[in-house]
Length: 510
Image 1 (cartoon, rainbow, N blue to C red):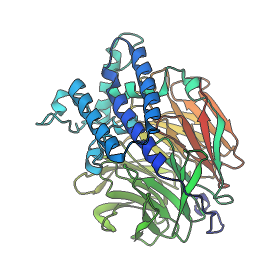
Image 2 (image 1 turned 60 degrees about the vertical axis):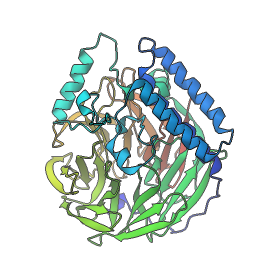
Image 3 (image 1 turned 90 degrees about the vertical axis):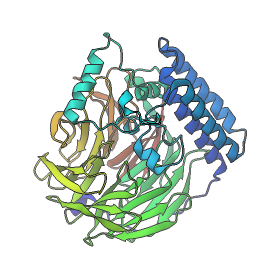
Image 4 (image 1 turned 30 degrees about the horizontal axis):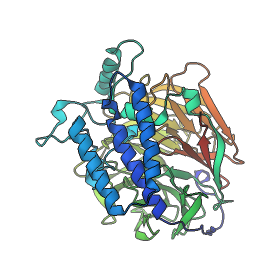
């Protein structure tokens, strides 16, 4: 199945310009402060939700203006700390994901406004530790979780919504627009063509970031791009792999990236200066085709290779974790964890998706379930989500499998058993097309997923609309669209294609 990841071409790419870091630091601070405010916004004026929306928009405007004042870094950090403390005293402690606590010392990096970073905790008093801090609450099973989700929703009056802080924050960021309006992407914000003539199989915005973007290419390099200040620029190109880069991932705090390559190595990069921190050979000496960070422990990375194996790698030691390997039926093309990091799904080029139980203490993998999506149809993308919207309340998996369909599965138990919920028509028969859930929880009827397609378009679908599920279609690529990625507030969408072009789309302003 080499046709899925091998595109012949040069190993050279033009270097991009360098932009100053001062403006980026300023922007990052106000984004982080806004994230803290958004998380607590659900507790402001419970009976007047329109006020909360106006408040967070005004806060965003003021913080943007303040970012231009050029305050010293120490003063900005002090403001972040005091702001978090004051809000905590006023409204009480909120759940903080263990992944953020373990990996980052920043209070703001623990304050996630996207659903994936908040969905694995309960607002249960029993979750409070001895000192009043939140701790992770283990859900007994996905089946129980789905039942609890429905019970909470159905106990509400007709037309009301589930009052979670994650949803409130998402609503504040998305605004009071309809689903179609919210995903009305039309204008091209920028086009990056530094990898022209070589496929770009993966494009990703940095975590909780609006303007930092990275993409990898089969020319053997990775580009780090900055969208503001204008004009957008390629900050640096990471070189070192001797063959095409098949996949990469940002760490939770965005300070490092891990990449996998057809040269049978994975590399660890410092995003700040582009240094290669470590090169790790594949334990089997095989082409590496995909990778993902363990969401709770970013010291562990899972990779999939061409010899049908999944390996859990310790990026600090460069060694394979004992008991952290398992064999699939074919070349491993896609990996995805659930948000708590206890379940891992892996897809191969024979059409199978395997679920694994992940031991949080040791990194050991235990094979649980296998689903044959379609015999012989490569599984090129897997995305997991615990709660899509107030209508789509079941834990779900989004899968591309070269069937000219995008498949949405329901996760029915704590071993990762999958049940097909519905499918959406796209063109995909031979390319490694990927798809994503939209990062913000929708307060409206329905919720969106976005996918690439071999018809050279980006497709938006409403997962809950029974008929005419297509919400939007973006046209502008001249080759099959391989990957898509939202920034944290859904104001920008990036898409990459098989000819090496990356288009950043801007959402229409209403």
